[in-house]
Length: 123
Image 1: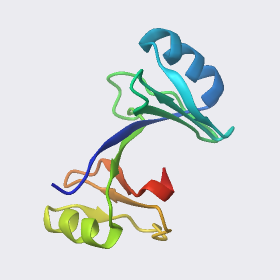
Image 2: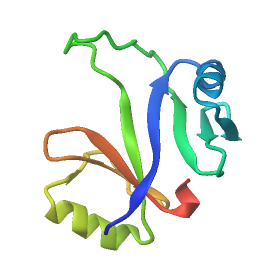
Image 3: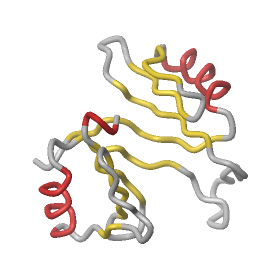
Image 4: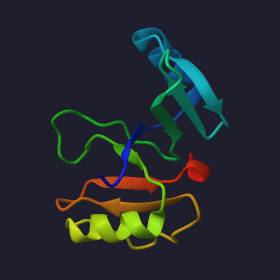
């Protein structure tokens, strides 16, 4: 095992507004709210959904490939260097421009979907 699913991250223009919707829809509560992102947790206190502010947000239009969904997975790991070697061996690619900050790194899966490896200090 490399890590475990920490959160699904959804791009949006206003995390606070979208959080109110998902709080009601999914019976979730706020774990964190920075203005840039809101983390929603389930009754057990586990983060399950992160709403992330994106400037110049363009809403997806299903099934228009020119306007695809804008979300990614956060995968919690204990060691970024070890996990990176493992996901690269599985066919992932470290994305250009990923500055490899402490706490998280951004990759794409073998067909191009982005995902992040994160550590507790990046959560």
